Amino acid sequence: DIQMTQSPASLSASLGETVTIECRASEDIYNGLAWYQQKPGKSPQLLIYNANSLHTGVPSRFSGSGSGTQYSLKINSLQSEDVASYFCQQYYNYRTFGGGTKLELK
Amino acid sequence: VQLVESGGGLVQPGKSLKLSCSASGFTFSSYGMHWIRQAPGKGLDWVAYISSSSGTVYADAVKGRFTISRDNAKNTLYLQLNSLKSEDTAIYYCARSAGAGYFDYWGQGVMVTVSS
View 1 (cartoon, chains in turn green, blue):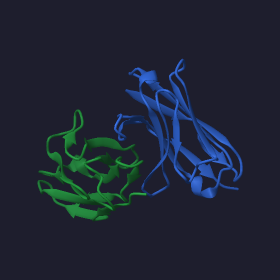
View 2 (tube, chains in turn yellow, cyan; view 1 turned 45 degrees about the horizontal axis):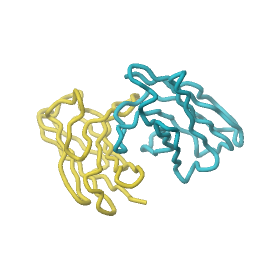
View 3 (cartoon, one colour; view 1 turned 60 degrees about the vertical axis):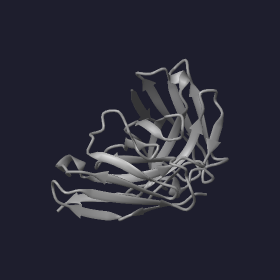
View 4 (cartoon, one colour; view 1 turned 90 degrees about the horizontal axis):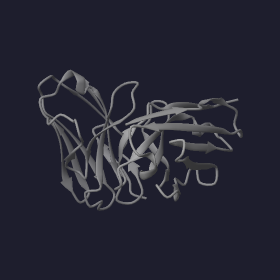
């Protein structure tokens, strides 16, 4: 099974700041990676797929990058509505999720 | 796109439960569908997948105990949960497959609690 290691587990940032969340796969996943946002008490919502493609309706301050085993999600100009947990997911071989990153406001 | 789960509740270990996911806003029969679960305060675990042609795949943790199925005439996805264990306690989400293996739309989730 492909293991996904996400970091950091928690993060505190200020409004307007740029935030980066990392995800490392245990083997090459060939850009088969998605990012999801989960607000408290809500279901996850797709942000990014194929490592760097923005899902319909997602603000352009979200972006994804990476290749091979290393991927990242960047949030530019952090807004209050971005407070949430973020999960990466690989779909190159079956489907596994990272452990999540809880983003809070400083 | 709207996905609405139902059928959750409190069930004793070893018992069974059947979850439903009612789909609307898209051509249900053309899409593969998934069940994903989240234990309280924990991360996400993929559970099962059914293709548009009803081929199925399961996570090792539920293989032989859970059965995913679909009724295209009713636009409904199902998950039959048998031989339930305490570790199956979670919110269960249905989600639409985006083809490559990610999930582009999710339901609101339904809670399953396995406890005596």
